[in-house]
Image (cartoon, rainbow, N blue to C red; front, top):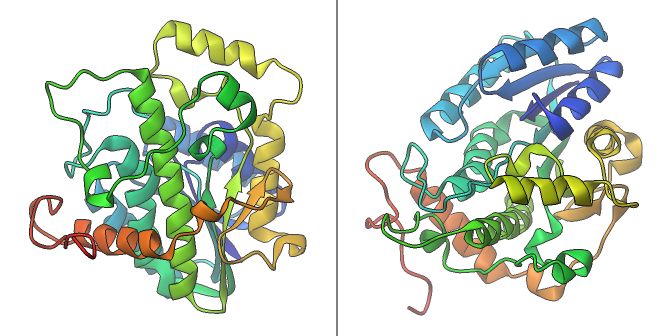
Amino acid sequence: MTVLLTGPTRGLGRVAALALAARHTDLILLGRPGPALDEVAAEARAAGATVHTVGADLARLADVRAAASSVRELLDSASVPPLRALIANAGLMSMDVRTASADGHELTFAVNHLAHAQLIGDLLGSIAAPGRIVLLGSDTYRAGGLKKLLGVRPAVWRDPAELARPAPAGAKVGVRDAAVAYATSKLAVLYYAHELQRRAGNGIGVSVFEPGWMPGTGLGRGAPAAFQALGRGLQRLPGMANPERSGRMLAAIAVDERWAGLRDGAYVVVDRVDEQPAWAHDPARELRLWEVTEGLFAPGPSTVDGDRVSPPRGA
C-alpha cells in the first residue's frame, strides 16, 4: 500500500513518517521542498521504505493542485502501489490574523482547512478501497479542562466565507485572535470530516486524530518569546502528550487493522475514540462549509467577496 503524508519534516509528522517507514510502507511525503524534506525522505528510505517526495507550499492552492497532479501521475503509472491512506497532518497557527495566503485567504484557515480540502478533493477518486483519510484535529476547538483554566480561547464559528477573510490591515490583533483562528480552523476540520464522509462512499473511512496537547512544540514558533517559554514549561507537566508517542499513533491509525473501522469523522484522542459534543455535529454548517470551500477553489480572483460564494441559507 501507499500512504500520503503532509507535513512530514518535523515533530508529529516526522515521527509518523518514520513509523510508517519502519512498516516498509510505500510513502509519498508532501511538504515544502528543501533540505528538511530531503532529510526525512532519506531517513525513511534507510528504514526500508520506498519514498517519493512531492514539493508544495500549502499556503498556495496552485501548488496543492500541482502536487495532487504529481501524485495522480505516480499512481496512474503504477510507480507506486495503490493509495490506501491520506494523512492530512500539516498545519500552522499564524500569529497575525491579518496575514493572507497566496490566494488571499486568512493563513491559518488556508493551510489547516483549505489546502487539505483541495488536496483530498483532487485525490478522492484515486484512493483505493478500503481506504482511510485521517485529518488532524485539536481539542482547542472546545478548550476544555486545563486549556480552559489557562484561558485558552475556544472556536468562534462564523460563516466560512468570513473565516476565510484575513482581518483588515489596520485592525488591532494579538495572540488571542491567533489562538481563536487556530481553534476555529480545527472546528472546520471536524465539520469537513463529517461532510466528506457523506461524499466519500462506503469504501473510505474518514477520521480525525487529536494528538493531545503539546504546547511546547513548534506550532507556535512565530509567537512572542514569553508565549513560547510558557509552552515549553507546560510541555514538561506530567501527562502532556509528546510527538514521539502521538506520531506513532497517527501512523497506526492510518494503517493498522485495529483502526480499520474508523469512519464518519470518528475523533481519536491519542489512542482512544472520544465522543464529541452535539454542537460539533451540525449538518447545516457542514454543508455550508463544503459549499464555500468549493467556491474558494474556483479559478480566477478571490471568490470570498465574489458571486461564486452564495449567502447562507435563509439570509
